[in-house]
Amino acid sequence: MSPVVEDVTQSGEAFIDAVERVADHSVHLLSEELTLARLEMVEKLPLLAGGLVRAIVGFTAALTGMLVASFALAFLLADYVFSDHPWIGFALIAVVLFVAAAVFLRGAWSTSRGAMPPLPTQAIDQAGKIRGAFRR
Image (cartoon, rainbow, N blue to C red; front, side, top):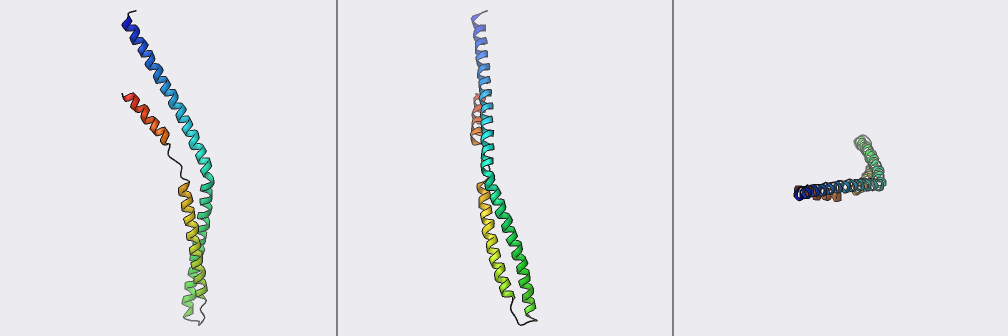
């Protein structure tokens, strides 16, 4: 065999080895990123559950407030027939329930925004570097 053929064969084998190493490292990196994402989701699950509970309580308070507000409106209309003013108490309770609903819903919103899963930026950056290495 001539020295030129041996050099080409050796450089081809070195290239194949390099490609295999890059592929192995890419698979390992992807596996680590998936494991990290899974662990982060397990960590954020209680935050999402807490946000869900706050949202349920907030929506229940809002629904109850709307019901009480409708009773207050009904008593307001009935006030034209009767001289008593019971609708003021119902309206006050409705306002308190709406404020409670706003507080719970705001808490649920901020909790759920903090619990969003992160982007795998390290894996994306590494994939870009690998793609750039193959383009050269």
